[in-house]
Image 1 (cartoon, rainbow, N blue to C red):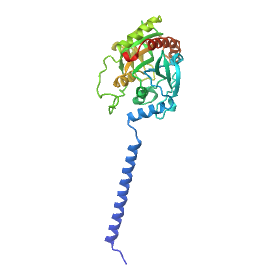
Image 2: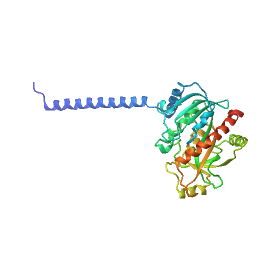
Image 3: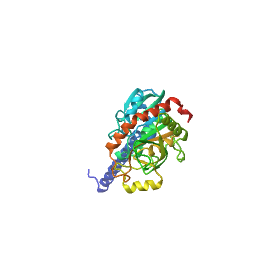
Image 4: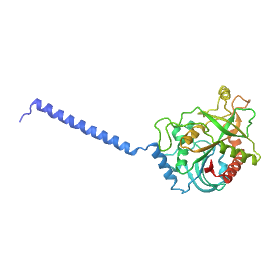
Length: 314
C-alpha cells in the first residue's frame, strides 16, 4: 500500500520531535546530576575538615601560620599528628621552597594548636578562595584565634633585617577572598575592618618578646601579589602610603579570619630591606636564611604567650 507524501512528512516531523524531546530530557538530567555532584564553598570547607578529623580528634584553640623558612617553630610543639595537605582531597598544596605543606596538631605552651607548616600563595596560581581555605578549615576544626607570621621586606631604615614587627594594620592589593556570594555560615556580608589585629593580644606578644630581650617594632603591612619582588618605585609608593613592611601573603588571610570573627595577631619577620632602599636586591635565598635564624626566637615568644594566657580572654 502506497504512503502519501503528506504522511511521510508527518512521520518525519514526529520522529524529529521525539528526538528533540529525548535530547532535552538528557540535558536536563545532566544538569541536575552536575548540581548534585558540585559542592558549595562551605560544603568544601566541611569536607576538608572531615578528612583532617580522620587523622586526629584534636580540637585546637589556636591556629598559627608559619611563613617562609619558619617551619622550625614546630620543634617547640608536642606533636600529636601531622597531616600533609596532599592527603586532603580538594585542598591546595604548597609549591614554594621553605613551605613544608603540613598541618601540625599538638600542644604548645600547654595550649592545643594547629600549625600550618607552610602556606599557599596567590602567586602560585591559586584562586584567592583557595588561599584562605586553610584558615576556614582550621576555624571549622575549632580554632578561634589566629596568629599570622610572614617574611617581609622592611620599608623603614630603622627596622633592619632581623627585626620582628607586630602588624597593627594592613593594606591589601590582592582581590578580596569575599568577592562573590557570601557564605552566611561563616559571617555577614558586610563587616568592619577596624582593629583587625587585636590590640590586647598584640600587646601580650610584645611583652613576651621583651621578656626574652627581643624588641619588636610595630607597623602597617602591605600585601601585593608577587612573585616578583617590588620595584624601587613601588617601595617609594608604599612608604608614602604609610606602610612599614611589604610581602606576598597575610592580608587576605586576615580578611577571611575577620569575616569569621576570629581573634587575630600578626608578626612579620623583616628579612631584608625593600628594593631601592639599599644597593642589594632582595632574594628568596636571603629571606629563607634570615627566617631560619629568627625561627627560634619566634618560637620562644609564641610558647610564652600560649603558656601564660588563655586565648579565650582576648
